[in-house]
Length: 82
Length: 133
Image (tube, rainbow over all chains, first blue to last red; front, side, top):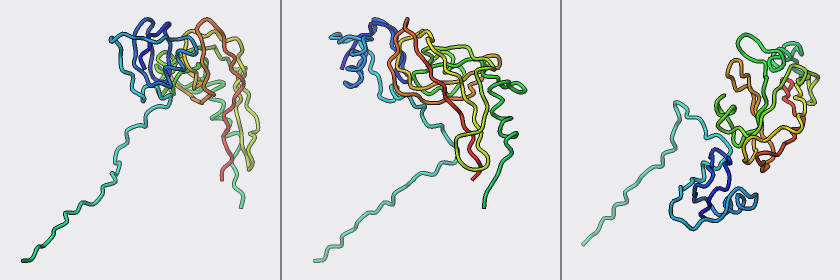
């Protein structure tokens, strides 16, 4: 849902700037509008906000030596007779 | 069989928030943040919504609430009517050492919308060092 910020505000790791348009997930748009920080926006000039930016938790730190979980692959061969 | 840790040793760590040590601490600023800060800059500016100064008297070290031998805790004093500098959704509270530009401790809080110009009350909270198990 597109919104335009009525004031500067921060949510999660994202800082929203007053009078700038954003495209955010519907639940967040409803919350921002409900608390009076934004209004609905019909314009096209808006920044897409990724869900991860709205998550208040820090992303997991990169670690060395991580082991991937790799699934086996198989090619099924069919023999035909005749 | 029971395990035990010397309370005075555990208090050395907790006292770091209250009085500090060599180039670390004390905690002299408490900040309400919109996200989990992982650096001093994030805690002090990027995610900061409201902040208040802290002093040694704001930290009380005592026996912990947990079981075992011997839990210890430091309780951070409540701070009321802290001005909200930037509107946002509070999710974390951090303790900073601004003299050394260090992010000392981060905890979570209930998600709460804060509006610039209003004030926020930060209740007392604690950091507990559990007894060895």
